[in-house]
Length: 361
Image (cartoon, rainbow, N blue to C red; front, side, top):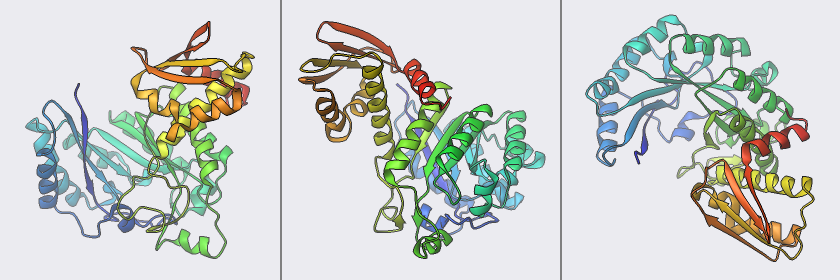
Protein backbone atom coordinates (compact mmCIF):
# COMPACT_ATOMS: atom_id res chain seq x y z
CA UNK A 1 0.00 0.00 0.00
CA UNK A 2 1.41 3.39 -1.03
CA UNK A 3 2.16 5.79 1.82
CA UNK A 4 1.50 9.52 1.65
CA UNK A 5 4.35 11.76 2.78
CA UNK A 6 4.41 15.53 3.23
CA UNK A 7 7.63 17.54 2.94
CA UNK A 8 6.84 20.67 5.02
CA UNK A 9 8.59 23.92 4.17
CA UNK A 10 7.86 26.69 6.68
CA UNK A 11 7.89 30.34 5.61
CA UNK A 12 7.13 32.08 8.94
CA UNK A 13 5.51 35.51 8.56
CA UNK A 14 7.15 35.76 5.16
CA UNK A 15 4.57 37.76 3.24
CA UNK A 16 1.85 37.80 5.90
CA UNK A 17 0.27 41.29 5.99
CA UNK A 18 -1.41 40.89 9.39
CA UNK A 19 -0.60 39.82 12.94
CA UNK A 20 -3.74 38.00 14.00
CA UNK A 21 -4.37 38.00 17.75
CA UNK A 22 -3.63 34.27 18.05
CA UNK A 23 -0.58 34.11 15.83
CA UNK A 24 3.11 34.00 16.49
CA UNK A 25 4.47 32.16 13.49
CA UNK A 26 7.96 32.06 14.92
CA UNK A 27 6.59 30.03 17.84
CA UNK A 28 4.29 27.83 15.76
CA UNK A 29 6.82 26.80 13.12
CA UNK A 30 9.91 26.85 15.31
CA UNK A 31 11.76 28.82 12.64
CA UNK A 32 12.71 32.47 12.41
CA UNK A 33 14.86 32.66 9.26
CA UNK A 34 13.67 33.54 5.78
CA UNK A 35 13.51 30.65 3.35
CA UNK A 36 15.51 30.63 0.11
CA UNK A 37 15.40 28.36 -2.93
CA UNK A 38 18.57 26.69 -1.63
CA UNK A 39 16.77 25.92 1.64
CA UNK A 40 13.85 24.47 -0.29
CA UNK A 41 16.13 22.17 -2.30
CA UNK A 42 18.02 21.01 0.79
CA UNK A 43 14.80 20.29 2.70
CA UNK A 44 13.36 18.27 -0.18
CA UNK A 45 16.56 16.24 -0.64
CA UNK A 46 16.85 15.57 3.09
CA UNK A 47 13.30 14.23 3.26
CA UNK A 48 13.47 12.20 0.05
CA UNK A 49 16.31 10.14 1.52
CA UNK A 50 14.00 8.93 4.32
CA UNK A 51 10.95 7.89 2.28
CA UNK A 52 10.12 4.41 1.10
CA UNK A 53 9.76 3.71 -2.59
CA UNK A 54 6.30 3.62 -4.15
CA UNK A 55 5.14 6.54 -1.96
CA UNK A 56 2.99 9.56 -2.74
CA UNK A 57 5.00 12.67 -1.88
CA UNK A 58 3.84 16.28 -1.60
CA UNK A 59 5.85 19.43 -0.94
CA UNK A 60 3.84 21.82 1.24
CA UNK A 61 4.56 25.48 1.96
CA UNK A 62 3.23 26.30 5.43
CA UNK A 63 3.61 28.93 8.11
CA UNK A 64 2.84 32.21 6.40
CA UNK A 65 0.69 33.67 3.65
CA UNK A 66 2.52 32.28 0.68
CA UNK A 67 0.73 34.21 -2.04
CA UNK A 68 1.29 37.52 -0.23
CA UNK A 69 5.02 37.14 -0.87
CA UNK A 70 6.51 39.17 -3.71
CA UNK A 71 5.63 37.36 -6.94
CA UNK A 72 9.29 36.96 -7.94
CA UNK A 73 10.09 35.27 -4.63
CA UNK A 74 7.06 33.00 -5.07
CA UNK A 75 8.46 31.95 -8.44
CA UNK A 76 11.92 31.36 -7.01
CA UNK A 77 10.60 29.13 -4.22
CA UNK A 78 8.09 27.24 -6.39
CA UNK A 79 10.61 26.57 -9.16
CA UNK A 80 12.39 23.96 -7.03
CA UNK A 81 9.45 21.62 -6.25
CA UNK A 82 8.20 22.25 -9.80
CA UNK A 83 11.42 20.67 -11.12
CA UNK A 84 11.05 17.71 -8.77
CA UNK A 85 7.45 17.21 -9.89
CA UNK A 86 8.36 17.31 -13.58
CA UNK A 87 11.09 14.73 -12.97
CA UNK A 88 8.62 12.51 -11.11
CA UNK A 89 10.43 12.58 -7.76
CA UNK A 90 7.44 14.21 -6.04
CA UNK A 91 3.75 13.96 -6.85
CA UNK A 92 2.19 17.19 -5.61
CA UNK A 93 2.65 20.76 -4.39
CA UNK A 94 0.41 22.47 -1.87
CA UNK A 95 0.49 25.75 0.00
CA UNK A 96 -1.48 27.70 2.56
CA UNK A 97 -2.43 31.35 2.32
CA UNK A 98 -4.96 34.02 3.22
CA UNK A 99 -8.31 34.48 1.43
CA UNK A 100 -7.49 38.12 0.62
CA UNK A 101 -4.22 37.12 -1.06
CA UNK A 102 -5.86 35.34 -3.99
CA UNK A 103 -6.58 36.80 -7.44
CA UNK A 104 -6.44 35.64 -11.05
CA UNK A 105 -2.80 36.66 -11.65
CA UNK A 106 -1.67 34.84 -8.50
CA UNK A 107 -3.55 31.70 -9.52
CA UNK A 108 -2.17 31.81 -13.07
CA UNK A 109 1.33 31.88 -11.61
CA UNK A 110 0.58 28.93 -9.32
CA UNK A 111 -0.73 27.00 -12.32
CA UNK A 112 2.52 27.70 -14.16
CA UNK A 113 4.40 25.99 -11.31
CA UNK A 114 2.06 22.97 -11.09
CA UNK A 115 0.60 23.71 -7.65
CA UNK A 116 -2.17 21.22 -6.86
CA UNK A 117 -3.77 22.28 -3.58
CA UNK A 118 -4.41 25.69 -2.02
CA UNK A 119 -5.47 25.79 1.63
CA UNK A 120 -7.16 28.94 2.84
CA UNK A 121 -6.67 29.99 6.45
CA UNK A 122 -10.30 31.01 6.90
CA UNK A 123 -10.66 30.42 10.68
CA UNK A 124 -14.32 31.56 10.78
CA UNK A 125 -17.08 32.70 8.46
CA UNK A 126 -18.55 34.95 11.14
CA UNK A 127 -17.52 38.54 10.40
CA UNK A 128 -17.58 39.58 14.07
CA UNK A 129 -15.18 36.75 14.98
CA UNK A 130 -12.91 37.70 12.08
CA UNK A 131 -12.88 41.32 13.26
CA UNK A 132 -12.21 40.43 16.91
CA UNK A 133 -9.39 38.13 15.82
CA UNK A 134 -7.63 40.81 13.74
CA UNK A 135 -7.86 38.79 10.56
CA UNK A 136 -8.05 41.81 8.27
CA UNK A 137 -10.47 40.16 5.83
CA UNK A 138 -14.20 39.41 5.70
CA UNK A 139 -16.25 36.32 4.95
CA UNK A 140 -16.92 37.75 1.48
CA UNK A 141 -13.18 37.54 0.74
CA UNK A 142 -13.36 33.83 1.56
CA UNK A 143 -16.22 33.14 -0.84
CA UNK A 144 -14.52 35.04 -3.67
CA UNK A 145 -11.19 33.26 -3.14
CA UNK A 146 -12.78 29.81 -2.85
CA UNK A 147 -14.76 30.31 -6.06
CA UNK A 148 -11.67 31.45 -7.97
CA UNK A 149 -9.53 28.58 -6.68
CA UNK A 150 -12.08 26.03 -7.83
CA UNK A 151 -12.59 27.79 -11.17
CA UNK A 152 -8.85 27.44 -11.84
CA UNK A 153 -9.00 23.73 -11.06
CA UNK A 154 -7.03 23.65 -7.80
CA UNK A 155 -7.93 21.43 -4.87
CA UNK A 156 -9.49 23.71 -2.24
CA UNK A 157 -8.52 23.25 1.39
CA UNK A 158 -10.17 25.18 4.22
CA UNK A 159 -8.86 25.71 7.74
CA UNK A 160 -11.12 26.65 10.64
CA UNK A 161 -10.51 27.54 14.28
CA UNK A 162 -12.82 27.20 17.26
CA UNK A 163 -12.71 29.27 20.42
CA UNK A 164 -11.53 32.54 18.85
CA UNK A 165 -12.52 35.87 20.46
CA UNK A 166 -16.26 36.34 19.94
CA UNK A 167 -16.75 32.74 18.84
CA UNK A 168 -19.41 30.34 20.12
CA UNK A 169 -20.25 26.71 19.47
CA UNK A 170 -23.20 27.79 17.34
CA UNK A 171 -20.98 30.07 15.23
CA UNK A 172 -18.42 27.29 14.74
CA UNK A 173 -21.13 24.86 13.60
CA UNK A 174 -22.47 27.52 11.23
CA UNK A 175 -18.96 27.99 9.78
CA UNK A 176 -18.72 24.21 9.35
CA UNK A 177 -22.02 24.08 7.45
CA UNK A 178 -20.90 26.94 5.21
CA UNK A 179 -17.59 25.13 4.58
CA UNK A 180 -19.56 22.05 3.52
CA UNK A 181 -21.52 24.11 0.98
CA UNK A 182 -18.18 25.21 -0.52
CA UNK A 183 -17.33 21.50 -1.17
CA UNK A 184 -13.67 21.62 -0.15
CA UNK A 185 -11.15 18.91 -0.97
CA UNK A 186 -10.03 18.86 2.66
CA UNK A 187 -10.46 20.66 6.00
CA UNK A 188 -8.35 21.28 9.09
CA UNK A 189 -9.80 22.10 12.53
CA UNK A 190 -7.72 23.96 15.11
CA UNK A 191 -8.89 24.74 18.65
CA UNK A 192 -7.49 28.15 19.58
CA UNK A 193 -4.43 28.03 21.82
CA UNK A 194 -2.91 30.96 23.69
CA UNK A 195 0.68 31.14 22.42
CA UNK A 196 3.45 33.17 24.04
CA UNK A 197 4.18 36.65 22.63
CA UNK A 198 0.79 37.10 20.97
CA UNK A 199 -1.89 39.72 21.52
CA UNK A 200 -4.17 36.90 22.64
CA UNK A 201 -1.75 36.17 25.48
CA UNK A 202 -2.10 39.79 26.64
CA UNK A 203 -5.90 39.48 26.51
CA UNK A 204 -5.74 36.21 28.45
CA UNK A 205 -3.49 37.65 31.15
CA UNK A 206 -5.75 40.69 31.61
CA UNK A 207 -8.89 38.55 31.75
CA UNK A 208 -10.27 39.86 28.46
CA UNK A 209 -10.10 36.44 26.78
CA UNK A 210 -11.08 33.04 28.15
CA UNK A 211 -10.00 29.98 26.14
CA UNK A 212 -12.47 27.28 25.24
CA UNK A 213 -12.10 24.44 27.75
CA UNK A 214 -10.68 21.07 26.81
CA UNK A 215 -14.04 19.36 27.40
CA UNK A 216 -15.91 21.97 25.34
CA UNK A 217 -13.42 21.66 22.48
CA UNK A 218 -13.70 17.85 22.38
CA UNK A 219 -17.52 18.04 22.38
CA UNK A 220 -17.60 20.69 19.64
CA UNK A 221 -14.95 19.05 17.45
CA UNK A 222 -16.90 15.78 17.72
CA UNK A 223 -19.94 17.51 16.19
CA UNK A 224 -17.83 19.17 13.49
CA UNK A 225 -16.07 15.93 12.54
CA UNK A 226 -19.40 14.11 12.27
CA UNK A 227 -20.82 16.87 10.04
CA UNK A 228 -17.82 16.68 7.71
CA UNK A 229 -17.87 12.87 7.77
CA UNK A 230 -21.51 12.52 6.67
CA UNK A 231 -20.74 14.91 3.81
CA UNK A 232 -17.66 12.90 2.75
CA UNK A 233 -15.22 15.76 3.40
CA UNK A 234 -11.74 14.70 4.51
CA UNK A 235 -10.60 16.30 7.78
CA UNK A 236 -6.84 15.95 7.51
CA UNK A 237 -5.96 17.42 10.94
CA UNK A 238 -7.63 18.26 14.23
CA UNK A 239 -5.48 20.17 16.71
CA UNK A 240 -2.13 21.89 16.36
CA UNK A 241 0.85 19.67 15.60
CA UNK A 242 2.86 19.20 18.81
CA UNK A 243 6.54 20.15 18.64
CA UNK A 244 9.32 20.52 21.18
CA UNK A 245 7.95 23.95 22.14
CA UNK A 246 4.27 23.60 21.28
CA UNK A 247 3.42 22.04 24.62
CA UNK A 248 1.53 23.24 27.67
CA UNK A 249 3.98 24.92 30.03
CA UNK A 250 6.26 25.90 27.17
CA UNK A 251 5.01 28.12 24.34
CA UNK A 252 1.38 27.11 24.90
CA UNK A 253 0.20 29.36 27.74
CA UNK A 254 -3.38 28.10 27.85
CA UNK A 255 -6.06 26.40 25.80
CA UNK A 256 -7.19 22.87 24.87
CA UNK A 257 -3.88 21.32 23.85
CA UNK A 258 -3.29 17.58 23.75
CA UNK A 259 -0.79 15.65 21.60
CA UNK A 260 -3.49 13.03 20.81
CA UNK A 261 -6.32 15.52 20.34
CA UNK A 262 -7.82 13.86 17.26
CA UNK A 263 -7.82 10.39 18.82
CA UNK A 264 -9.73 11.76 21.82
CA UNK A 265 -12.29 13.37 19.50
CA UNK A 266 -12.75 10.15 17.53
CA UNK A 267 -13.10 8.15 20.76
CA UNK A 268 -15.71 10.59 22.01
CA UNK A 269 -17.70 10.15 18.79
CA UNK A 270 -17.81 6.37 19.27
CA UNK A 271 -18.90 6.87 22.89
CA UNK A 272 -21.67 9.30 21.87
CA UNK A 273 -22.94 7.10 19.05
CA UNK A 274 -22.87 3.80 20.91
CA UNK A 275 -24.60 5.36 23.89
CA UNK A 276 -27.20 6.85 21.52
CA UNK A 277 -27.67 3.45 19.85
CA UNK A 278 -28.19 1.64 23.17
CA UNK A 279 -30.66 4.27 24.35
CA UNK A 280 -32.86 4.60 21.25
CA UNK A 281 -33.11 0.80 20.97
CA UNK A 282 -33.76 0.30 24.69
CA UNK A 283 -31.02 -2.31 24.78
CA UNK A 284 -30.91 -4.75 27.67
CA UNK A 285 -27.22 -4.53 28.64
CA UNK A 286 -27.02 -5.38 32.33
CA UNK A 287 -24.75 -8.38 33.01
CA UNK A 288 -24.46 -8.99 29.26
CA UNK A 289 -21.33 -9.54 27.16
CA UNK A 290 -20.65 -7.01 24.40
CA UNK A 291 -18.52 -7.96 21.39
CA UNK A 292 -17.61 -5.30 18.83
CA UNK A 293 -16.26 -6.23 15.38
CA UNK A 294 -14.35 -3.39 13.74
CA UNK A 295 -11.94 -2.39 11.03
CA UNK A 296 -8.44 -2.31 12.50
CA UNK A 297 -8.25 1.48 12.12
CA UNK A 298 -11.16 1.94 14.55
CA UNK A 299 -9.97 -0.39 17.33
CA UNK A 300 -8.14 2.29 19.31
CA UNK A 301 -10.85 5.02 19.02
CA UNK A 302 -13.57 2.56 20.03
CA UNK A 303 -11.58 1.43 23.06
CA UNK A 304 -10.62 4.99 24.03
CA UNK A 305 -7.40 6.20 25.60
CA UNK A 306 -6.33 3.71 28.28
CA UNK A 307 -9.56 1.78 27.50
CA UNK A 308 -11.64 4.71 28.81
CA UNK A 309 -14.65 3.88 26.61
CA UNK A 310 -14.65 0.25 27.69
CA UNK A 311 -14.59 1.30 31.34
CA UNK A 312 -17.32 3.86 30.72
CA UNK A 313 -19.73 1.41 29.09
CA UNK A 314 -19.15 -1.24 31.74
CA UNK A 315 -19.89 1.31 34.50
CA UNK A 316 -22.76 3.06 32.69
CA UNK A 317 -24.56 0.07 31.16
CA UNK A 318 -23.57 -2.77 33.44
CA UNK A 319 -21.89 -4.94 30.81
CA UNK A 320 -20.20 -7.97 32.26
CA UNK A 321 -17.44 -7.93 29.67
CA UNK A 322 -16.54 -6.00 26.50
CA UNK A 323 -14.28 -7.34 23.75
CA UNK A 324 -13.26 -5.62 20.51
CA UNK A 325 -12.04 -7.71 17.59
CA UNK A 326 -10.42 -6.78 14.29
CA UNK A 327 -12.46 -8.00 11.34
CA UNK A 328 -12.50 -7.48 7.58
CA UNK A 329 -15.23 -4.88 7.77
CA UNK A 330 -15.76 -1.50 6.11
CA UNK A 331 -14.33 1.38 8.13
CA UNK A 332 -17.76 3.03 8.30
CA UNK A 333 -19.39 -0.02 9.90
CA UNK A 334 -19.10 -1.92 13.16
CA UNK A 335 -20.72 -5.15 14.24
CA UNK A 336 -22.07 -5.56 17.77
CA UNK A 337 -23.07 -8.74 19.52
CA UNK A 338 -24.86 -8.68 22.89
CA UNK A 339 -25.29 -12.30 23.92
CA UNK A 340 -27.63 -13.65 21.17
CA UNK A 341 -28.34 -10.25 19.59
CA UNK A 342 -26.32 -9.09 16.54
CA UNK A 343 -26.42 -5.95 14.43
CA UNK A 344 -24.17 -4.42 11.80
CA UNK A 345 -24.26 -0.66 12.27
CA UNK A 346 -23.68 1.90 9.52
CA UNK A 347 -21.92 4.59 11.55
CA UNK A 348 -22.60 7.39 9.06
CA UNK A 349 -26.33 6.71 9.16
CA UNK A 350 -26.15 6.62 12.94
CA UNK A 351 -24.34 9.97 12.88
CA UNK A 352 -27.11 11.48 10.76
CA UNK A 353 -29.77 10.20 13.14
CA UNK A 354 -27.84 11.48 16.17
CA UNK A 355 -27.32 14.93 14.63
CA UNK A 356 -30.99 15.19 13.65
CA UNK A 357 -32.23 14.15 17.09
CA UNK A 358 -29.95 16.78 18.64
CA UNK A 359 -31.27 19.48 16.23
CA UNK A 360 -27.84 20.01 14.64
CA UNK A 361 -29.03 19.18 11.12
